[in-house]
Amino acid sequence: MEKQTRVPILSANPTLISLEIIIIFCTTAIYAIFVGRHVGPKEAETMDAVIETVGPVSDSILLIIISVAALFEIGGELMLRYTAVLAKTRAEGKAEGIVEGKAEGIVEGKAEGRAEVYKEWRADWERRRQEAQVKGIPFSEPPPPNPETNNHKP
Image (cartoon, rainbow, N blue to C red):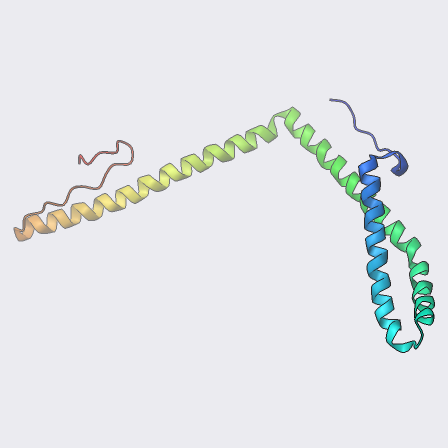
């Protein structure tokens, strides 16, 4: 297993850098809309509203860039750590065992559930049959199907 290493943010995948730039642009645009709506009604002229909007937005751009870069760096670090832990558990055979054990457990649980339901159904059928026999009433109800053999034999 080759070791994964961190790469500087500027030498990362170009798709991710493009995604970062798009997120920065969208975040800045949304923030500018909020500031513009807050400032717009107070200002009479359009140019004054633009100037009043650009000031807070330009002050926040550095914070937005740092936040988005940090988000991608932290996300990348978490993904690398998760991948390393997953690779380690796969190498030790634990991950496949957990998944296989879970699947086997589900199958066993379903089989046990079917067996319990069958026992209860069969006991109820048997009780009704005995009551009919004691009362002398003909009992023609077939027994419940056995889930193991899928037949109606008692």
